[in-house]
Image (cartoon, rainbow, N blue to C red):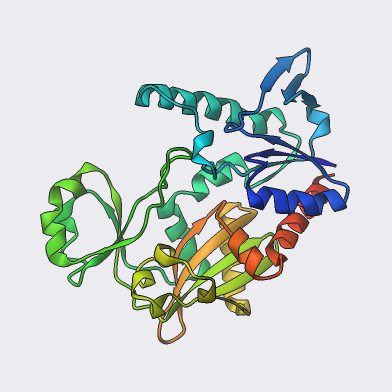
Length: 316
């Protein structure tokens, strides 16, 4: 067995999972555009890819895992003369990398290209979450400031519609804007659509990792620190996190969501209200989980590796 990973060898998510898979006899190849990998496509007569000196044909790969994230070491990025050159670099690598899943069409995938693309649309997520039975916040996606003051008289949560691309990135934190600020920010709001949601009074939050049939839930005590009450990523502390049992009813809703979105894995973010009810915020189709794996004895790496192993077995 062998898998092809589009990502970075230095990514701890990759290294921890591939170490476990190697113990089960699963080999791996990594295409790293930050390395950068030496990548060569050839058609003679069947397609083959040479990655860092190793030639791989369609028959060699059982599964493709897209795990492309911003580089851990920003110095790995090329030096660009201007934004146009940077955009060109991005476009050429993305065109090459996104074609690989189609070249190896017989291989299984973890969150295939179309599922990844549609699954990253937050508007689509909200519809699917509601259909799966989750409560969702009152939401507007808009760049019209005149439409935002009436639905949200007490202020709004603001979030961007998408993450910054996989290079030169910064984290997009959630912000709260008061009613009067929306008026002052009218010109900025008009620039592009964004997500505006009602303010949810949180008791705490949940990070729920769904890997195939496995579900791992973690309580985030975000309300004890003023810095993390709006967005817990603002001041991460290991003591914030606690592994908990996830109610079977909510697990069924997560699996229903995953089926609707045709996803193999996803990282759910929920708020928990004072009455214990969950409010769905979003799903990251290739979200970060390794810091939780480190805190809780490697359970997530093992679960993710087993998902890959079972996915390969299911298509053989």
